[in-house]
Length: 512
Image 1 (cartoon, rainbow, N blue to C red):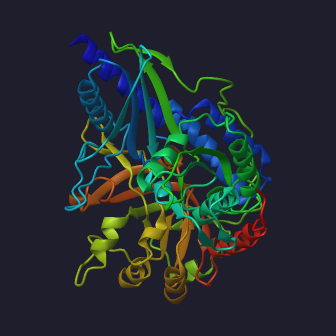
Image 2 (image 1 turned 60 degrees about the vertical axis):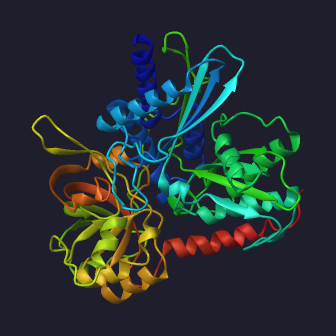
Image 3 (image 1 turned 180 degrees about the vertical axis):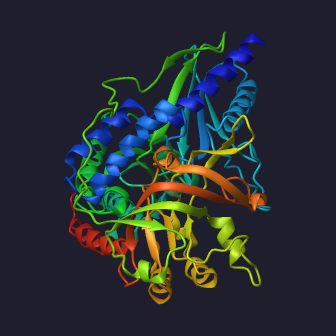
């Protein structure tokens, strides 16, 4: 019994540390990106917010990003260790961490849409075992959110790639696929990001290999010379695309690339890419199989950048507009792409389930949304000692998922502003112009920064959809975002996508 209790405690510590405290190598990569960025830009402002958020998450022992992802464990055990006990201990630790708001409840029944509330469900969390000859247990954990998971991509060679042309079954074709994978993510995966690449295998093993690469150290060197050169090349060239942090444009688009290779069938040639956001949450521990206690933490090499007491960017050149809902059409039409807004007063959360619900025929909104702001966010929530809801983490989710609904919902209910990350498409842009609306881009992953701007939770509707998908009524103060789509037909996201495609095309000629 003492062994199992210690094992559960060790695993709980692993989950908490992974969710709330970025590893040293990731911090150093973000520091380098911040130093390379041009002062006074939207990207520089975003990186300021990101580093502030990292400090707050560590101090508060709260999630760095509200989307704590789908927990994926890789467990290495000596011969004779009971893997069934370990899996049960992992489930216990995951449920406890969810109850303590270190994780957001993310396990949703794919048929009914019901959220288990514990992160335990059919196939979740993901646990993969491998035996080895070492005399200790190693447990690796990665928390990879849905926004970056949705930007994973798999290529079957040969292929025709936008901007790059034909990618053949050779190292140069692999190069083109990886460059394309970075470009297609734009800001929707919370750039600047990291990628793991799997060459070969079948469709499932290729993705497994790609995700396995994300457990490597950011600053390691691939033992295969051609792949070491390719990893360095991909980072260097990706940072010429101008996608930048959050897709706002800028110098930092990719912070790391790791590539693995395995054999394949003669008929198949897959290149699989696992895209990870800047909030690169992965950690590993060694455990004594006799006691269940932690004997070693991984990713501890090198300097730890704290980001404390850093000089902040001067953003005085950016136009800052105060917004308080309900907002008039006249006020909205005065906004232009690039304006910085600070929101105070009321806003409402609403994401996938809410949008699907509201678009239904004859469905009325639970509150009057005329002139209001909808925030694409699935917060981490907890109750205080008095039984009141408290926001523990509240960054934006990727907005493009709402593209089929958003414009129609804005017109139907009179919504004046929607806020999320990564931008939206032409249907929403047209509706913004016709109706008089704007899209506001918050800083993806900055869940502690934005939670601090939320002063109270004043109500909640549609809790049957689960905590992340419910409509939360929030009172906020100085909630900062950038206008990236306005009511005059302008979209920063479309502009960056077009300009970065031109830069991508510059790398079409054979290199390898």
